[in-house]
Each structure stands twice: as C-alpha cells, then as structure tokens.
Amino acid sequence: MGNMTQSLMTVDTLTVEYWTRKGKIRAVDNLSFSLEKSETLGVVGESGSGKSTLGLSLIDLVPFPGRITRGKIVLNGKEILKLQKDELRNLRGKEICYVFQDPMTSLNPVKKIGDHFVELIRTHEPQVTKQQALERAKKLLRDVGIQPERVSDYPHQLSGGMRQRVMIALAIALNPAIVVADEPTTALDVIVQAKILDLLNALRDAYGMALILITHDLSIVLQRSDRIIVMYAGQMVECAPSTEIYLNPKHPYTQRLLKSIPNIELADQKLEAISGSPPDLLNLPKGCRFWPRCYYAFEKCRREAPPLIETGTEHFARCFLYEEGRKA
Amino acid sequence: MKKLKIKKSMLSHLLPGLTSLTKRGLAGWLVIFGAILVIAVIVMTALSPWIAPHDPSALTVGPRLSPPSTQFPFGTDDLGRDMLSRVISGGGVMLQVAILSVIVCLIIGVPLGLFSSHTGGVIDRFISLIMDSVYAFPGFILAIAFTVVLGRGVINMALSIAVVYVPSYFRIIRSQVLSIKEMSYIEAANAAGARKRTVLLRYILPNVVPSIAVVATVNFADAILTAAGLTFIGMGVPVNIPDWGWDLTNGRNLLPSGAWWVITFPGLMIILLALGFTLMGEGLSELLSPKLEE
Image (cartoon, rainbow over all chains, first blue to last red; front, side):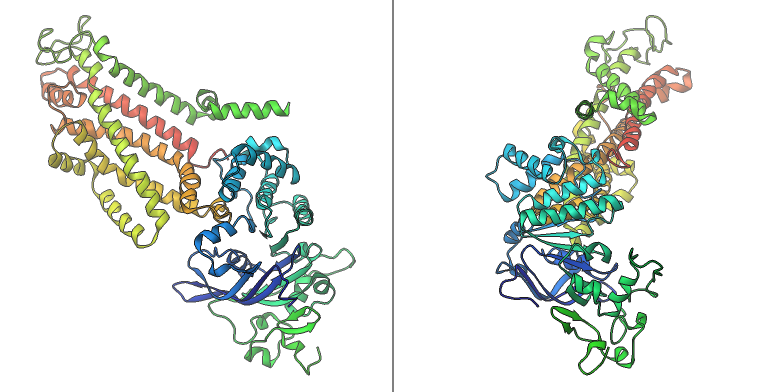
C-alpha cells in the first residue's frame, strides 16, 4: 500500500493478543498499513474491534495481559518494537503523541495545567527551564484557543471541551511526527466535537504532523481524513481513500455502516441498523468474521476466511464478492 | 471580573483552612470541631507543667479520696494526688504514643502499599497475604502480644500499635492505587514518556494523600484508645508517670467505694481526644474521598 520507502510510518503484519485465562484473544490480527507525512488516517470500528489496541501498540503500550506477538512498526527508519526502554520513552510524547478519549480524567487532578506542560517538556528536553516551559505552554494554549492565563488553573476549573483542548496542546507540545487521537470527542457534545476535530485538522496543517483518528463514528472521519481503515473483529476489512469509502464502499460492513448514518441529501432516508452483534473474539465464526451479519453471505464465506482483495487503486476489501472471476 | 474570580479561587486553594471548610456543610464543621478538640487537648497537655495547680505525681497534696470541691475541682485519689492536675498532664504519654505510631505507620505502610500495588504480580500477592493476615488478627490482642515481647515504654507501645495499623494503611493505599492506576491521566503520562518512578511519585502518590489523611486521623483515635487500653491492663508506661489509662485502672478499683471522680474525669478526657480525631477523620473522609473537588 502506498509507497513503502517514503512513508512516515509503516506497520507490517501487526498482531496483538490478550492472553487471558480463557484463551488468547487476538485483538489486532495481521494488520498492515502505512502512514504518510501530514496525512489524516481514520480508523473506524465498533467496540472491541481492536482499534484502541492498535493505537496503543504503536507506542508499545498495550495494557497487560496484551502483547504484540508479531509484526513490525517502522517510524522514520526506526523499528519501534525493537527499541530499548529509554529510547521508547523518548519516542512516546515526543514523536508519537496521544489524545485520549476521556478528557475529564486525562489530566492529573492535583496538578496545575501549566505543570503538565512543564513536566512533559522537561522530561524530553531537560535543558529547558521551568520558566521557558511555561512560556511555551502559554503559546500552545493560545494555539488551541485557551487563554494563556489558564496555566495556573487546576483541571477541575476547566470544562470537558477545554480539557480536551489542553490534552491536544500537550500532544503537540514537542512537535511530534504523529498524533494518535483515540476517540477524542466521544465524551463531548456535538458542537464541541466538531470544533475539536476542526482544531485537530488545523493543527495538523500548521505543525505538519500526521494524524491517526480512531473512532467508532464513521461520519466524523469521512470528511476529515484522507484515508480510512475499517476494522471488524480485529481485522482490517476495508482500507481506502475516504472519498472512495463514501462513494464506493466495497465491504458489506462498510456499506451498512454508511446506511446507518443520517444523510441530509436523502430526503426520506431510512436509517438501518446492523442486526446482530460483533463476534466473540474467543469464539470466532468459521470463515469470514462478518458472515453471520452479512446479507450477501454465500457458501464460501462460511467455509473460508477471505483475504484482502485489491478492488481499485489503493482500495482494499476483505470480501469474496470481489474475488477474481466473480461479478459483484 | 473574570480575573478576580480566578484569583479568589486560587486564594481558597492556598488557604484551604477555615474559609472553605465553613462552606462545605456538616462535614466541614465536623473537621473544625474535631480539630478544636484535638488542638485544645494537645495545648493543655503541652502546657501542663505551668497550668497544673499541683505536681500530678505528688502524694497527699490533699486528703485521700476527697470528692470534687472548690479546692480540688476533680477530687483526689486514694494516695491524695490532685485529679485535676493528673487530668491536665495525663495525656502526654498517650499523645506521644499516638503520634509516634502514626509516623511509623506512614513510613512503613505508605511506601509498602505504593510499591506492592504498583509492582503487582507475585510480590503484590505475597505482601498482601502477610498484611491481610495481620489485619485479620484482633488489633488489641496483637498489640498486647507485641508489648509483651518488646517490653514497656513509649516507643515500644508505639511500635506495637504501628504493627496493628500498618495493614490498614497498606490496604487503603493499595486499593486506591489500583483504581488510580486505571485512570486516563496515568495512561496519558505513560504515553507521554514518563518514567515509572515519576508516575508513581508525581501522579499516583499526590492523589492518594487525601485517603492517607483520613486513615491517619482514624488511626490517631484508635491509637489513643489502644494506648489507654494497654496502660489500663498494666502493659503501658510505669505507674509513676501520670497517665489517663492508669488512672482508669486505679479508678476502677476505687469505684466500689463510691469514688466515681477518679475514673470519670480521665475517662472523659480519653473520650474527648478520641472523639476529636474521629470527628476529624469522618469529616475529612466525607470531604475528600468521593472525589477531589469534583
């Protein structure tokens, strides 16, 4: 996918498993993709599809009992999964930054806003004085639309939307190459949601970083990302430029996700839910993981697992409908 | 206008004392009332050499077993010692024991709880097992056993009480750390490249402090009662040091002869002091434990 040599980051056959008492749960299954410089990549999937695990594995921070059992992540020529502890710590927060889902609990309640910046900046750049770090914090806060005087406030004095802006300011503080935003707007109301997402994209352009936007809501990434990965039960089921996903979705899952989004252009659109529920990862259906919920499922889907099939330029779908010699 | 508001809230952060406590309803008043009781007893005990009308250990300063009168407001005991002076100065040992034991508990219990829960795994399970088995033992009996082994004296009493209380600190801190560890800001700190030590000391510990304060006040109250109990059964300090606990023993023997004043006043002092700490602990736990300011 893409030009492998020039990509900012390439992820190759990444597999993450949670080793629980009941058995191994494969949360991310053989995922490969690449990320270009200053690109926005949307990762969409429902709860338990492995999208958050994917995000955390990019900085080797999968929570216990999860472990990355296979795969290679290369960022700027560095292989992340082979780094020493110190190198990994330097990478986190400096080259790959995170914006978490819940802004209400993402800031340390006993520390002032400014201290969060001072600590982050001085962890990675020890020569910076506290004063300088505070000055940078003020500038960053201005960039995300918060009054600079707020550095001396405590987190509880800020609203949810403001806290998420602070989290974003923290994420861009050290000018990272990649910002991973894991459901950054789930805990916020719709208006704030749009503002935060626009801010993220504006900052992406201003700072020239790549953005990975993880969400369960296809509608919010459709217009804001360049490419979209759709995940289902730990697997990538479709990967394509977002216009392609919107105009020409291939995988039945993606098609039905789109039908469940209200569309202002369709006057009497009937919203459709996808019946059934995602499979238990301990007890996956044989064959394609989506077949029990798929309208088009046929004999082969129940027997064999479909591979990723290239259906167009930079468009991949994991579905037998697009197999050679078969007319969709 | 807006600036003023921000400054005001900063002020209340700097002075979290009376101004904000009075606005926090019943819990705030509990803390204030408890603190007044405790401070009053501490000040009284500290100043006892100067404010006690008689030497608390001097024999026959008055007639034996005289009931409360204008000359001896709290009466005298069977050796003619002034009960008022004994009440004023009798808290010294108890307070020393309580303070020492709380310090020992803090030094052992807090780091152990932090370390154990943060390390996890087999080490955590092993330490928890030891702590739970100590916790399961009746506290007072364990304290008696330890004083028997260690011998009398303030420090030994403090150590025996500390042994009983370290598990409470450990358990509270461990459970707190386990829940704080799952908070997003810890994950965020890790994702931002913070060291393990930094996360533990600058992110987790400050958020456990409120719970530590609550346990410590409750621990104070119980330490007072245990210290009184140890002295009462004769395992505490030597009898020549005035102590409420010993006066209780003495008073109990004298009670059948109708001398109610010997046991009543020291007993009331123990209750007041323990009450002060309990009120503070109750108030603090109500103010702090649900959530910090949220």
